[in-house]
Length: 383
Image (tube, rainbow, N blue to C red):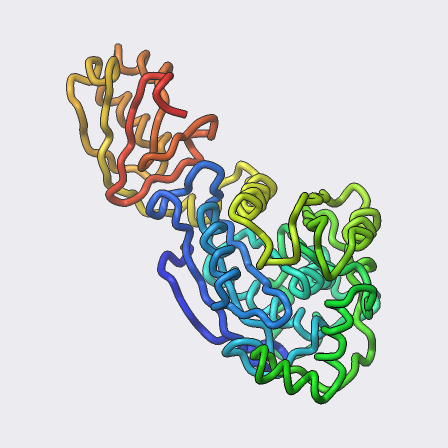
């Protein structure tokens, strides 16, 4: 069963670093999936450098994503309340692996990772290193195998099912823009690390990368068959458009590329419209039409069916209770109680679930909430 309650916890990565993480259930329809929502899916949000789980831009993204799926936010090592020091994208793949493994332990069968800037590079490398095909075959020589060392064995459940990289770099050590030159000063100089710790709230490690981790552009060809979305703003002051284009070219047919007009950099520049479109994309690519274990075995919910117009006349009542898990089950019970005219009327009706139109979704995929309302409407009134 999927966890229904919000949680804040601390996770231990396989190299012993403690990571803060926050779980939030899907908010659509008071617990029932909204239009485009996919039960069983969780979106893991990986913030950019100097971010954290509690930063306003991360919270805004979480609220938007929660309309389509459950959401986990977390703070990378060296950020927020997490332990350790930042390695600026190297060992952070272990942080993502720990969070994804936790998401599956909570009952979620489908996990989408969405990373911004540094977080984008991390989720790309994570997806390349932790894949379903390697669960059985073991690690392959992809330039590094950090995903398969350590004590927890989290790699067996730590793969992602789809990946979104927003404002991610394609290659390391890029200094072609003024913001990136300033960032390199913060990371590589003692005075810069002092500013990072006390001015930006980020504890940065002093060690250089050894070995240099797999670059994002080398990672993306290894992600398929998992769906990949690359999002980048045409006004990004950190990474120009050759970065997303390099990533998309390297991924080939395995990726979609969205170049956003007027957008700046990462989560701070992602507006509500873009976040919603990303959430819709995750719903589309993870909805395989099959019920999850939670959907198959979920307890029945009790609520109210309200009839309008011709449906009300055919039913002989304005409303009645339901006890069902899905809309399909509720309507089947209605047909058994009211054979004849109402059965014919239902073929022409549309439906609202807690105010949200069902539209063209299969009724067997639409879960009902405890205390919810199903409204049976004339075709022109609903979705």
